[in-house]
Length: 110
Image 1 (cartoon, rainbow, N blue to C red):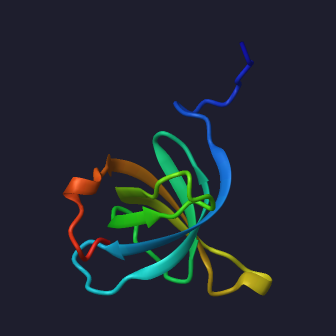
Image 2: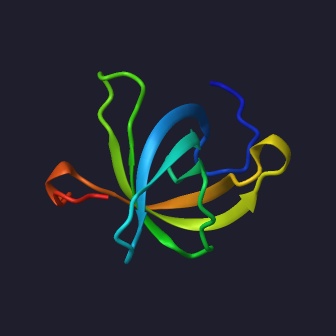
Image 3: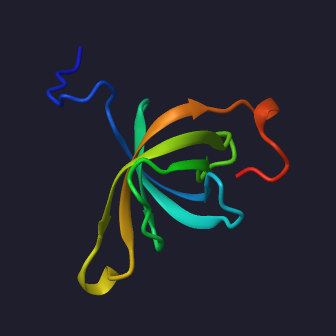
């Protein structure tokens, strides 16, 4: 058995996957990059500041066609602006509220 000392409920996996999301209640979609993901949350990088407690509909597109996209509803926990060369970019930590089946997705998701 592997020793795991992190206090999180689920281990995080570093990834770099494109994603598309919509803040619930908005019409517009935005692009993001998922930096890491676990069974309970994800961290995304985007050019839009997102308020804590905002809910997002998000589709994460993996790099390999063998893995299907992940469609979910997430809640923003924190949003931090990056500085320096990445000014105007935000790191957003989210908890996964619901993973959606393909049958639950509308034609306009997210």
